[in-house]
Amino acid sequence: MIPIRDELPTQKLPIVTVSIIVANVVCFIYELLLGPQLETFFFQAGLVPAVLWGKVRPLSPFIHPFLTIFTSMFLHGNLFHLLSNMLYLWIFGNNVEDFLGHFHFLLFYLGCGLVAGLSHALIFPFSTIPTVGASGAISGVMGGYLILFPFARVLVLVLWGFFFTVVRVPAALLLGIWVFFQLIYSLTSLLSPTLGGTAWFAHLGGFAMGCLWCKIASNHYERQVYW
Image 1 (cartoon, rainbow, N blue to C red):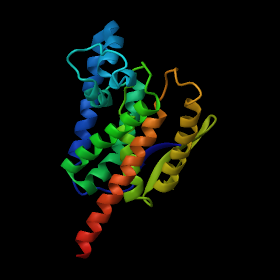
Image 2: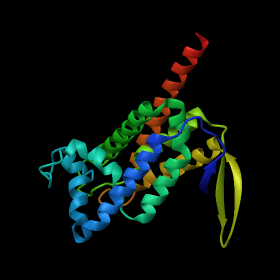
Image 3: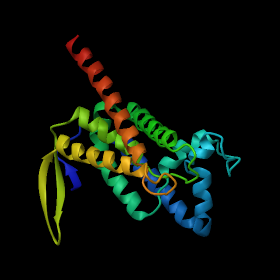
């Protein structure tokens, strides 16, 4: 199932969500301009767990290893990687930003990305493979959406071989299926820790942080309303 859009209107313009999308697109254009130097750039600005924990010397003297947790969130391996991440961010980010507020959402997004990066680095501390992508932070946004809007309807594209249809499903169902597959893929990745690929544990870490953060935020909001 591929989400297309949700049916939950927003009250405010999602300026932070749009700004994050623009920043990711600009960074991707910069990547394209690097040409053959792109791989070296990924090792410098991507998250390399072995470098983060001081087991390997960093390639760049200008970027502190801890900061690569954040710089890696704005880099992508290819166009499909970028477009799929930005689609999910747009669908789920605008409503979460609408609830949290602009500045709070920015802190939330970066916080989820931080936990996502650390989750991956803790599971694979000796990995020398650079990790790039916004999916860890966006997984946090999806977790927040699940907590805040579990019954919101999301339009998804369902593929059946050469045929497809569009259906409306509750966010809880869509995101529940997504989490299930992340768990399966995460456990499978433990069998080949030295290989590259998707940082599944980053997804789970970011998602868990998003759920926790928005659960606390929603409880705080409810107390303010009732008081």
